[in-house]
Amino acid sequence: MKSLQRLWPWLRPYRTTLLIGLFWVIITNGLILMTPQLLRWGIAAIEQGNWADVQFYAATMIVATLLGGGIRVISRLHFLHTGRKVEVDLRQAMFHRLLYQPGPFFNDHRIGDLISRFTNDLTNVRMVAGFGLVSLINAIVIYTIAISLMVWMSPSLTIAALAPFPLMLLAVKKISRRLLLYSGQVQERLGDISDMVEESVRGQLSLRSSGFQQVRCRQFDDLNDHYLEAAVGMARMRSLMGPVMSVVTPLGILMVLYFGGRQVIAGTLQLGDMVAFNAYLVQLTMPTMLLGWILTLIQRAAVGMERISLLLDLTAPPLGLPEPQEIPVEANQPPQVYLNNLTFGYHADKPVLHDVTLEIPAGATIGITGSVASGKSTLLHVLTGRYPVKQSQVWMDGQDLSDMDMQRHSQRLCAVLQEGKLFSGTLADNFRFAAPDLDDETLHKVARQVSLEKEINQFTNGFDTLIGEGGLTLSGGQRQRVGVARALARNRGLWLLDDPFSHLDTVTARKVWEEVRDALKGRTVLFASSRVSILQNADHIIVLDQGRIREQGDHAALMAQRGEYARLVEREQLHREMEGL
Image (cartoon, rainbow, N blue to C red; front, side):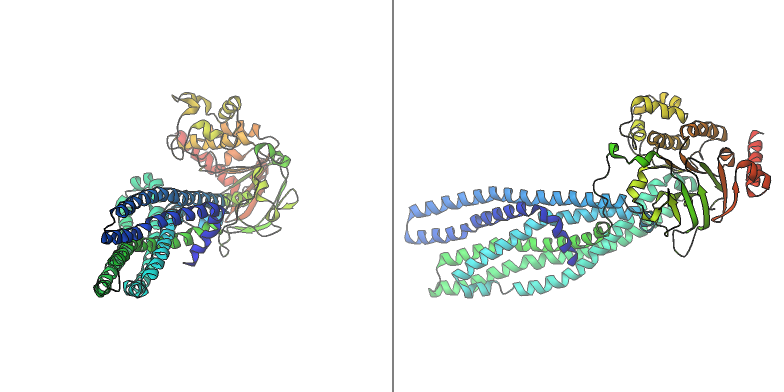
């Protein structure tokens, strides 16, 4: 429950709205709770035979009820609007923090579970910040006013009427503990299910082509059964909460009828007083029944707040992100890069790169090749700044990467990954993703540079063609070239290319690279590829083997060494010859 204390800072900006809502809650409940007193006075007027007073009290009850109902709408709007605003604020804070996290964070957390925190958990928090809060305050106000009036009318009868309530509180305490446990399990299971659905949808082609649907379905059914077990447990506790709450008020009414009836017969209590007393107990019925629902909501919100705190506790993004016109001058300048005995691993006890030392002059093109899992992609990942490295191992223009402002570093970076992510929308939207002010002339130019303009013109809607989630309607080669074109539209000082033409045939890949290379003159480029023929014109080439530099030099020097690089070149030539047969 302590986790809900963390909700207050997000409610604080709206405290004025909440105070106004509280004012209207007090007014509306004051009007509603006038009716038992008006009923009491009306009965007294009947006993005295005063018909005029009876009519007045009846009319006043109607006015008070209608007015109270209207004001209740106003009071609820204040709280419900606050709940929605808090939800928006939390979602923005979570999303902004998420996007600025380093690579290890995403290695350690599942995407589906993170999505569940944005949906199920945040919804539970929003419910308690909106309707749950107004219902709780409403119950507190009704209990305070009603019980105060009951004590004023008859302290002894109040004690008798409220006698069942302590037993209810003990039962609720026990049920709440179990409810909190099951709520946490349900949220965790929903995260597991979201993660599996997300993975399965993204990998549905692989599942179908490999015939793993039945295996995956059984795995999903197991998760669903675990969720059902937790959900049934939570439903069982909630089903107990309702009857416990609903039985309290009828027991109180029975106590009033028994003790109050004896007092009326004895002449120590007026009939109107007993009727009003019962009316106050009836007014407590709905808040008491809602109290069980409120407690359930609070338990689920407590779990939800604890889970979204994982994101809220992350480092906040920098304030005042630079607008396009505020891009630092060095962003377009090619940096000098120096790797000094770089040793790095995604896990501390499993290094992927070992003692990599390399000096890259500003404006040079460096080719990186090697066998599968040799560390090519990892080296580029390190240079993006997404992963923390030890001090003095990576330098750019004489500045230690570990001391650099990552926001400014990203401003001078163009990174094109092997499976570059495209976003739902049109082709033009994706081209302009990193350069929103890209004009149509430049748009066609960068498409032409990656040999994509003719293909796009063959689409019915051209650059306005919708490409689906992740570029679903495009081929693998087209998706990669869109990623390269998007980077060309940005064209900053440091380029990191991770096998960006792997889905293209050798001839097309070399043709596209020749065009792109001309556009990158004067830029610092690191190009990782398992296709060595495309790297032959690089200023310097390194060959990685199990995370270590085994060979380095230009193409001619490496061929003269007759080492691993030469073997890779000969293997690729043999492969091309076999394809030509």
